[in-house]
Length: 466
Image 1 (cartoon, rainbow, N blue to C red):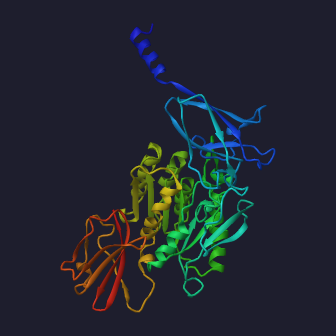
Image 2: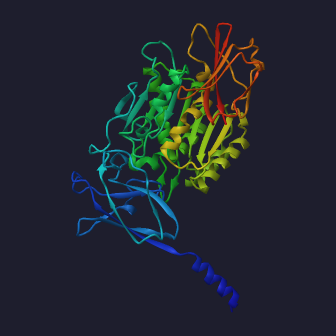
Image 3: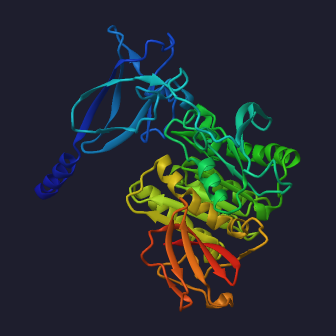
């Protein structure tokens, strides 16, 4: 017989789990919504799948759209948006603007009403924000490895048409969200604006190729292994498309530097996971990997795969996570750092950063894209475009916390020292400096240019303040 104390303990455990109910009702949609189109809710509870049949709303007799959400512990908060089955058909704001993820906390009410103001594909996305040096390479680039087509974007450096240079290439996933707020569903990375700004400051920038995700096929294509709840299993075919079809096309039709030292891959969330996978699978192709908010939690197979893959080539991994993204996300990134280090990658090949308070959003990735680029492509980026009177220097230490040491540069004493931030603003200026030890403790974390004028010559480099 169970003792009374045990019964009491069991009762307390059961009572500690108070489940909350939630009914979502969309009471109005735009008048132009196509008749017969389904409406789904996509969020962090279903891997942000925009066409999950388990989360399709049903239209009632009052022409309202209704769904009974699965129970969750009272106090749990979910993030979500409404779609018509594709991220190109996600809801937008009254003026066609991006809207923040909707939030709901279980326990705050059983029934919640919503109004949808606009759809992204029905004129609700506003005007394109892509820079002039961004173009759509093909609206339907054929993917033989997957037997489907996809829109592909390309960013060309501002001097591409004026110079005869060759450029590194960075391949990025979720192309809808990289360059253009009009096509994005949660905001854009502003990769084009960021690189154009760096270029204006004398930093060399690469070609960037963006591949749209496949909407309902996104998880399938970005996950090499099958997850019984979310899908997956086509990651190999997707990466093989990049390597066997897209990269050869880009290298043949554009002035690229096709070798591994000048080829990178970058993405966020599921795009971060497939970037890690693709880079390890093709170590002879990639040397630079940008992994933002990686969704390592979605499959234990990522750990098995990483443990089985040996280090074959030198590579650089830049990982970044927001501190408010959740325990599984944060723990996963740091575990991957340790796993890669255990496979032989040196600490100078690994940089993992946790941003306090950072959330799983495009704005987080946008704000840290420049930092990732400048670290991954440091040799190329710091090779400032050639000018007759400019000499590139390496700053030590880099990244730096408090002091820059100029003694290793073997320069005469600078007449002027200038530090410029990524907005082009001079944040530090000293004339006739008397020491090779420069205090930058007061600067905010970020990327900076340092410019030294010495006897009529100009020396320029960059550094990351942490």
